[in-house]
Amino acid sequence: RRPRSLFDVSNIYRVPLMMMEQNLHTMLLQRLRMGPFATKGVDYTTVEDPTPLEESEVISDWIKLADSVDEPESECVIAVVGKYVDQGDAYLSVVKALTHAAIATKQRLRLQWIEASSLNPEEDEVRDTETKKESWDLLKNSDGVVVPGGFGIRGLEGKISAIEYCRKNNVPFLGICLGMQAAVIEYCRNVLGIEKAHSAEFIDELVHDVEDAVIFMPEGDRERMGGTMRLGARETILKEDSRARKLYGKEKVMERHRHRYEVNPALVSKLEEAGLRFVGRNTDSSGERMEVCELNDSNHPYFLAAQFHPEFTSRPELPNPLFLGLLQSCKEIISRKEDTPLVA
Image (cartoon, rainbow, N blue to C red; front, side, top):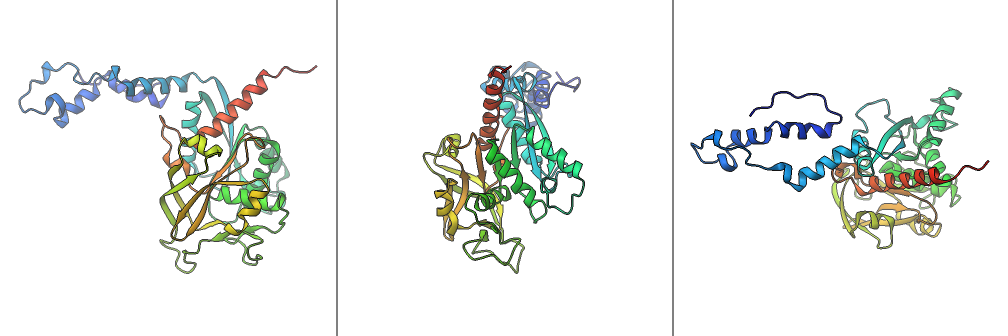
């Protein structure tokens, strides 16, 4: 029995279910000479359904996933504050990770794309006051904010402004790679009072171990750029009492990296004394890396940032814990708002 047609379905996760209903899995076994078809000369017409997938737990879970997409319980608006928002595929992995988390929390995901430069009132590149107002309105009307990774100084101040808004107004926030570095710079400036705090990637004349919140990694090579990044999967050890540890459900996690700069370890003790906890660290031959930072649950509903890229390990049936935590926090806040009676 061959597939007769591939027609439109309500969401992409129903496509494999539709193909399974038309017996594609049996056709593949036949073509690859697997299972009951491995023996030469077997009569293909005698094998009705050698793989009862409909009864498997995998397919049962996949059907629930597809149903969750079609039957969301609420809507969640996430603002993505980045530099490359005009490039459709630039943040595709982030979009997919957010989508996976939205499915798991039974929410309809709506994304608001905000060009980071438009959030900086002193940014020369954006002279249109109306554009700035529209961007800030989008940010303020979002349920949560993601500041993803990137390269170059353009838009950095806008990202810092967005992070400051999230921190002060209890808006769920997730920072990734440069997004974490921007969060540390923001905290240095506005909480520790280091007005000129910045990244050594962009500013050379910074007071050593005072203003250089982000520094070049010691094993890096400033002259030879090719092949000098800290790349690939690295182990991160999470503190027991942290939000990140609760989300992952284990002490050690492997996540993928892509960076040359890192949080300055010399400032970590001051930052932690002021409330920004570095709950994920990596210890290797070159020294201790700051991998995850967060604010306590009592101080913020969800303020968390990672030096690694959690979006790379997210899957439809297994969303990355950091994205899942963000969407869960957003849903809880939305639910509380809906349950709060209006005051006349």
